[in-house]
Amino acid sequence: MNPVLPAAAERLADVWVYLATTPLLGLTVTLLVYQGAFMLYQRSGFHPLANPVAMAVVALGTLLWATGTPYATYFEGAQFVHFLLGPATVALAAPLFEQLPRLKRLWLPMLGALVVGTLAATVTAIGVGWALGASKATLASLAPKSVTTPVAMGIAEKMGGLPSLTAVLVVCTGIVGAASARFLFDALRITDPTVRGFALGTAAHGIGTARAFQVSQEMGAFAGLAMGLSALFSALALPLVAGLLLRWV
Image 1 (cartoon, rainbow, N blue to C red):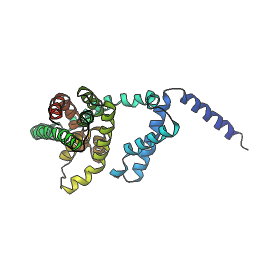
Image 2 (cartoon, helix red, strand yellow; image 1 turned 135 degrees about the horizontal axis):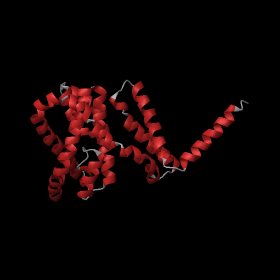
Image 3 (cartoon, rainbow, N blue to C red; image 1 turned 45 degrees about the vertical axis):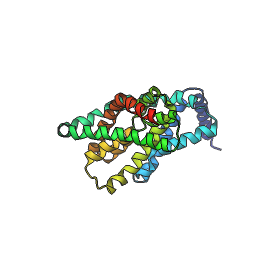
Image 4 (cartoon, rainbow, N blue to C red; image 1 turned 120 degrees about the vertical axis):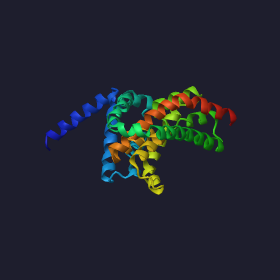
C-alpha cells in the first residue's frame, strides 16, 4: 500500500477534528456547500430554477439535521458570512455610480415604483396570511418579507413578529423572486433592464439583486438601488402601515 495515502488520511482527520471544535466549521461548510451549488448552477447554464442559494440552504439544512448539529453551533462560524452582508450591500454603490446620468432622469418614476411595490408586497402578504388564518405574530413576520434580511428582522421584532420566521420568509421570497422573475418579465413583455432590475430588487432584495448582476451590470445596479431604498423606506413606513392593517384583521 502506498504510505502516502494513510498519512494524507491522517492529516485530513486531524484537520476535521480541529474544525469540529472551532467556529470555523460552520464557515468552512457554508463556503464549500455554496461553491458546490454554484458549480451546479453554472453547469445548468445559470438556469433560474437552479438557484445556488436555494440548493445551498437545502443541503446545509439536511446536513445539520443528519448530524444533529444545533443551529446555534453552526451559526457561530456562519455569522462571519452574515457580517459580510453589510459591506457587500455598500459595494453595490460602485456599479450604480456608473448609471448616475440615467438615475437623474428616472428618479421620479422609480420613487413611485418603490412606494407602490413595497406597500403592495406588504399588503398582499398580510392579506393572504389573514385569509389563511395566520396569527397576528405570523402576519407581523410576513409583512417585511421583501426587505433585506437584517432590516426585515428588525421591523418584524418591532411589530411583534418572530425575527427567525421573518428570516426564513425573506430567503424564500428572494429565491422565488430570482427563480421566477425572468419568466414573469418575458410574459409581461418587459425588456428594459432598468425596469427589470428595479422591480427585482424591490421584490426579491439581495438574492434578486445577485441574480440581476448575473444578467447585466445595468440591471444589477438598479436592483441594488431598489434593494437599498426599499430597506430605508420599509424601516420608516412599514411599522406604521402594517400596524394599521394588523389592527383591522
